[in-house]
Picture 1 (cartoon, helix red, strand yellow):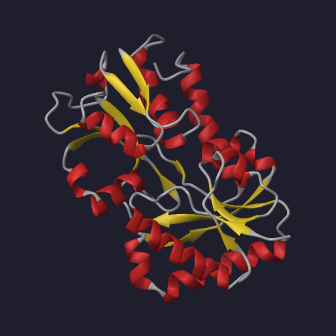
Picture 2 (tube, rainbow, N blue to C red):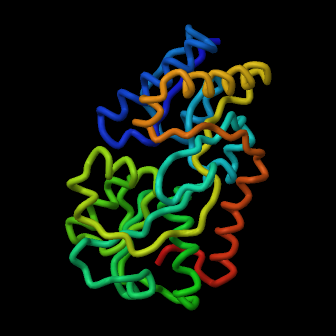
Length: 263
């Protein structure tokens, strides 16, 4: 079997994507030099389920909604970013820098943007934050699905939406790489925390190789401190799958409050 790998999640700019690819190549050379780094040519749900994925990264929401049956969690990165605590992360609630909104509660009747229906950081924790404010009714006047966190930021900046929830790691990278965008929005809150985006492998990867991958992650981190700083990496945690049940808990709390959908 020819192993493949890809890191599709935090490539905020082409320059940052290059650094992530260099990091991934370093990790793989320590584990399986013949593994091919690829650009997924299909939607990510299909890619993550391919039987020859040696290393990739997914969102926790699809992980707990069926993907966990076909993949193994290798490790969860710990990031140096405001809104992160250990291997947990939150989302930053943002509005335009010049808008009148000073809190999420003040956004009743405003327009929301979110990235994807299956995003924990862009949709699930956003829904959870709105749920106690909505009082079992529609909270926003319109909801726009943008396809990405950068798309949501641009929707807010371009006055196509008023508020969005942005993965705090993504937002930290935007501040680093695209400061002109970051300066056009203002933070008005932070969502509840949950485990961060896990690194995963196919169930076909032997357990011994999973352990070798974990060792390679830590070694690549230790030997390239400047690169780790650029990628805001503090290290990796081997979280049990049960920790990701926190994501379902947030979903269930929103549903119990009568707010099943971001509306």
